[in-house]
Image (cartoon, rainbow, N blue to C red):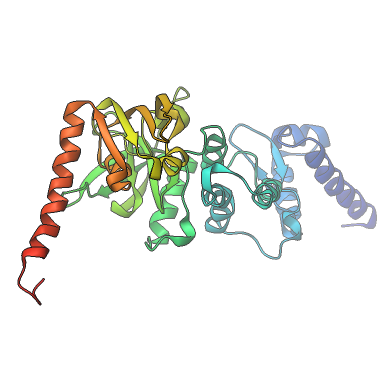
Amino acid sequence: MSASQTVRFASRLFDLVNLIVTNPKLYTAPRLAEHFHVSVRTIRRDIRLIEDLGIRVESEPGGGYFIMRDLQRIPGILTEDERAVLDIMPALLHASLPHGRVHPLVDTYRRAVEKLLPEKSLPARQVADESLSTEGRIIADLSRSPHQTDDRLLFEILFAIRACRILEMDYVKIGASAPETRMVNPYYLVPWHNSLYLIGFCHLRQAFRTFKILRIRRAKCLAQTFERDARFSLGEFLKSAWGIDQSGPRVEVHVRFAPLVAHYAQEDVRRHSILREVYLADGSYEVWFRVHWNWEFLRFVLQYGGGVEVLEPLEVRDQVREEILRMSGLYKKIDEAPQGVT
């Protein structure tokens, strides 16, 4: 290559980078070839040379090239696993804060990641965004989670979400002795109360369902893709749940909290489930909820012990009483046991 050819080649590479930087996702390979009066093959060769210089050039199906800003300053190329973790971490960091309050450092971290990664990457970022608009219902403190999950299983799920691919998994339902194979269109990975949950469309149930990650024994991202339902809203989906569990019938529950625990109850109730609330003169707090009656809500009620009473409906009140009697029976057995025997 002559000196003049070298200059023209270097000039084209510079102009190519500048064109992509100033017009991200606009220029495809054919359009760049037309602009520089060269072949598509030459443009793709130039792109490879630019990447060899440490500048990461990306493209999306049906879209033009763009350069991941600042990524050329990072030593080495990020693996898919590393990119996935960088992208999902803002959602997990947000989830570690109580009541959905976002610390300024978390926002700063998210802005930094958005500069490094494409605008459209893992839907995990959408989880964080939606959680900001759903009154903090997607909350967890993962730093205190005692559970460990296989990293590869998580990445298999993440990649299935990212690529809109069907996920084949072996899942163990509560009370089941063995796992059953499910085919799921995975939408979101949601942290909640020290655990992670997968929300997706279950082929077996033909409905959106919630799956606890700890109960997934095996996960495989299949080659078959699916089209996300644009009508599905994570916020709307979780509205009918007390937390994240949507099993059980939806009922209206009337509860009274004694003055001793009323203040704590007011802090802990899920505001989206409240139909009506009354603050009584003696310091008691009465509230009417519309919730799914299941173990998740029962655990919330029982944590207040003798400081809470379910007033209505009668069938729910009876179930709470039965649970309390079972608990009382356990302690009664201990009291009646011979001394030194438990």
